[in-house]
Amino acid sequence: MSEIQKTSSNQDNTDLDKPELDNAGKASKNIVAIKDVSFGYGPRLVHSGLNIDIERGSITTIMGPSGCGKSTVLGFIGGRISPQKGQVIVDSKDIASLNNTALYELRKSMGMMFQHNALLTDITVFENVAFPLREHTNKTEQEIADMVLDKLEHVGLREAADLYPEECSGGMQRRVALARAIVMEPAIVMYDEPFTGLDPISKGIITQLIAEMNERLNITSIVVTHDVPEACEVSDQIIVLAGGKALGKGSPEELMSSDDPAIKQFMTGAPDGPVAYHYRSQSNESEGGH
Image: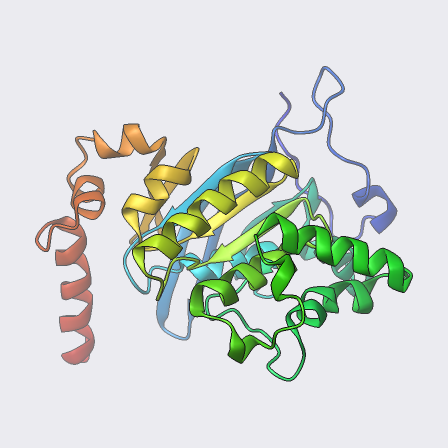
C-alpha cells in the first residue's frame, strides 16, 4: 500500500475528492492518519509528535489520562482544531488544505455523538434526529420521516419519537444522540465519552449499539472514553495517549497483556506508575513556577 502523501496547500480542491488508491486500485486502508502532530494551549503542550492511524470499518478507541488530549483528536479530525505542526488526513484529504466549502462537505460524511448529548430541549426526539437532514440536505418530508424513524428503530426508540428530551431518561437521551449521529449515514462516527454518567445496563446497551451500527451501516467508529471494560468489549483497536504521544496501540487483548509499565498501569487503573508520576511531576513544576 502506498503511503498517504501530503497534499499541497495550493492544490485544487477537486483533486482532494479523489480517494487515494493503493497499487491494487483500492481506497487507502486508513481512513484517518494523524502524522507528527503537535498542539498546545499557550505554554502547555498537549500533543508532541502524535501519530495515529485508524482503519476503515474499524472501531478504534482513544484512551488516556484526563487532559491528555483525547477529545482534541476528534477536533483535529473534524477540522474544528488545527494543529500547530503536522498533518491530519481524513478520507485521503489533507484537512489543512481544504477551503471552507470543501471542509463543510467533508463534515457531512462525519457524525458526532457529544459527551453531554447536546440535544435541543425545545423540540421533540424526532426533530432532534431530523435536524441534520433539514440543515444539510434537500430531502422531502417523507424521506426525512423514513430516515429518522429508521434510525430511531435502530436504537430502539421509534415509539419515543414524539417525546421531548426532558421526558427521556439519561440512557434514552444518549440513544437519541446516537440516532442523530448516524441519521445521515456518515462514513465516520465519533463518540466523545459515550458511557459517562450511565448506569451499567445503559452502558451495555450503548456498547452493543456502537458495535451494531458500525457493522450494519459499514462505518468507521472513533470512541473517546475512560471506561476500560467497555472499550475492551467494543474495540478492534485501542490507542493509549500519554505525554503528548501515542503510548501504545493494539487490540484489547494485546494491551491488557502488555509488559509496558505505563500501558499496564492505565489498563488496570493502578494509582502508582510512570503515567501518574509524569502528571504529578508536571503539576508540581507548574505550582513551582518552573
